[in-house]
Length: 609
Image (cartoon, rainbow, N blue to C red; front, side):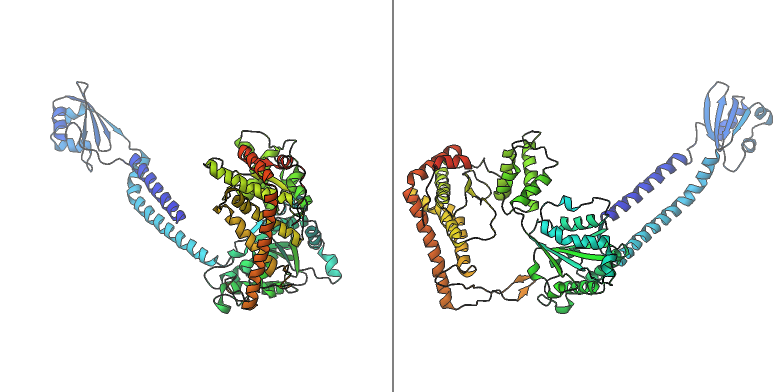
């Protein structure tokens, strides 16, 4: 529709221009001048006319009294003939000088052609415009099955493995793909078949798309990028047609890489949605399977795909000969996070006090995209303060903004609410500092961020892939710390602990039903998921245990919560004075950094649960 309006505007402007041109070049018939022909004849007979200038049908009459008058003659008759008919004597006419001015050739032809051709030109323009619109609609209909693939040339915006920090194992795994694209002959000569499909699996933001582009950059080959959702349309067969067009286009540019992002949009398990075999998504998936099977042995084409839901992919997509090379991209560890931070800090002026190693320690679980966003937020903080460089505090503030949301310093809090929040966070931090198995406290604040009225930031000193039961129990006790502190200090409870209780209940149930950490129930898991799904989402969770077992599960969940509750009561009851000191410091300063917090509590001896 915007294009239609644009074309219509052009037609209006052209017609307006032609109108202006016509009005400026073609002069319509002028009305009669100062005198008529009869009066002119009388003046000539009376000897009052000295000169007549003839310009077409217009007459310019110069009298003996130096007056200039205007008149018009008959269009089809000459001037002398007209004057003779009006009884002008020959002697009187002989005393009048007659001058004839030739009419402009351009004006003559324009006066003839424009009234004739202008309507014809307008009609031709309308016909041409209508034809172009119909032709465009026809072309759109024929191009409906074309894949909207984006091609990145290797020489333009080239990305290599040096631009991808971390992911050492993944890059090593992909090095053979790069080598095949560079030197396919040595593999083909020995009878080796390089994997046709490479599936990159990992959480959002771990660098799947960037790594795929780096493979193309290292091999110096074209990179065809398309999202899986672009294949599917409401019309049956369009997705399959676009798949065929994509592979045909890529084969012409081979060696090349096809990258399909979010392949789970079309690669989900077949037969689990609406429509059965006629489902457009399934038809598209079938065509991808056929195209990958149709690769000739010497086809220099690699299909790479990315997903964060590998568990829902169709088994046929993962069998040997298709996506048989699967590479998992984990969240970066502390060393990889430091490398990623250094990479994204290259174009940012950091002050000397910025310690990227400490920033990496404070960001466990952050993906590469999170870390890039982190430094970007730090640069925004610095720019808002009209600074030219980014300091360490800007980066720390950006961590909290990314994790918890922006600070709501302007939020009006009554002194009583501030005191309750201070004791609540003091309870969390005191329990965390009193348990050996708990992670160190990095920051305590009662400044509201996001939906939280305050927060206690505790982070592990090193990355852990495994977690023990005692660590889980310490986490439960810390979650209950705010609840217990409020109850023991004020003798009442608020809604501030609702999120803590929700998280504690979920963790306790996971300890029983997922991790097998209940001594009474033993090493069993519960709540197996049924295979039935609707549009990729589970409808039914199969209950693989009896009602009697459900009662035992509830009892064990309650036991874990009660044990954590008792541990929190024991710590806070025995260290009420220290709880008050932490709360008062928070009321005064609102925020305690790690050094300030541990200087305040001193050398605490761990309390056994």
